[in-house]
Structure formats: C-alpha cells, structure tokens
View 1 (cartoon, one colour):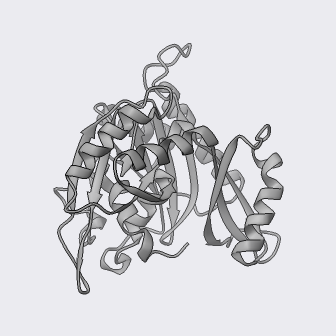
View 2 (cartoon, helix red, strand yellow):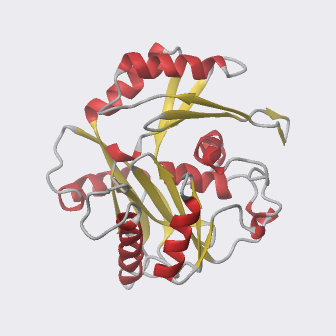
Length: 299
C-alpha cells in the first residue's frame, strides 16, 4: 500500500506456481493532513483491505514529507555491523536527530565510483517515531499486519527491476521524478541499481519570489542532479521519466530546457517487454506494485 497525502494506492500480486497473476489495483481517497491520525487512516485502510482477495500481511510506503533521506558508504561488512556503523554516523548524517526518530537503511550494492577502495553504498532514512507508531496502529485497526515500511523510491526500484529486468533494455542511467501532492521523489538508476534518492518537499511553492508554480521544482531537480554529479554517485542520467502531475507536459518542457536531457511524460519505448509496466498501466501504481515484490528482491 502506497500511502500518500491524499490517497492510498493498493496493489496485490498473487502467484500460481512460478507464474504471476494479473495484479489487483485500487485507489482509495485519503488525506494525511499533518500526521497519520489513526482513525481516518484506519478507515481508509479498511476500505483498501476490502479490495484485497483475502486479509493478509501488508507492506507500505511512508509519506515522503515525513522522511529525511541521506546517503553514505561503508566498507564491506555484515548487516549487523552495518546497522551499528550507520547508527554511529546518524548525528553527522542527520544533525539534530534524537531518540524521537526511527531509522532504516537499504544497501544499494558496490560503489563503483568510490575513491576510497572497495565500498558499499547505503540509503539511510529517518522518520519521527510517533508517525511510525501511528502508521502501525492504523494498519492494526484495519485488520492488516504491517510487516515492512519502505521509501517510495526504493519501492519503485523494485517495481522497475524486481521482476525480470532482462525482458527490457533500460539505458545505462536514467532518472524518475515521482510527483505527489506537495512532495516529489527523485531517483536515479544505473545498471539496474538505485544510486540516488531524494524527497523534494513543498515543490508547489507559489510564493517563491521570481519563480512560477513549477519553478521551485525545476530548480530543486537541477540542484539535486548537480550534487549527484559532484559526489560521483553514478553515471550522468541521459533521460528522466516524470510521473503523476496534472501539469506533466509543462513540467517536462521546463526540465528539458533546464537539464538538456530527454524527458518523458509517458512510458518510454525502451520499457517494451517490462513484466509489470504495460502500456495501459497507470505508473502511479508502480511503488505499490514494487512493494508486492519485496520478498523476491535482494537489498
């Protein structure tokens, strides 16, 4: 379940032997407001659960405006040692963080651009503890067992490459800009791996002096990619896919002018053959579908 500010996107992907059934998709209106209030979110989740073929365990994204995302690299080590090392780095990665936050991390794999020898790259995310507790309570209220909470960009990574990446020919490096009400998630992929993620909060800032309605978003995407290049996190993306806005054409035109790369407002032709992203699929369901693949993916 992809929990957003104004709706919940639901996906259920059943299996029959080695085959994957046609996914069940649903969209439930919802308003997160300033936080996950157990009653309204629980009611929306109950509606979402009624769309499922049976009551089951669930995985969810956390609403992006509630997340602080950072990246780091470590020498190769086991999961327990990595968790301890990241916890030790937290005051530097997220200044001001205290025991009132819950953190998690995802190992992205080898860092081929490191100048410090063999390193492993990680995405680290922190969410206020009260928000995580409210999210779990709302799922419990809906009769659903929440087994995992994940970033939207990580869920979309699983959607893109978690099923059968050999069935389509992705470029070496490309980006995805996923737009929600007031929040945008930017991700860059290289060779089937996620190598950069950032949540851009408040992108519809009409009060920013000298910028039009989308100007702040365009500036922040450009600034993010400049930082990505400066830190040598991966190869330069040669294209960008924009998902989920009523003004997607205007945003794509602005990004094309500013970034000088090809910007897609709809499914690129190189995704032909993708096992989940069919031509008629609303890509806004991508993160929810990616969550259904969590148990099948490494990292």
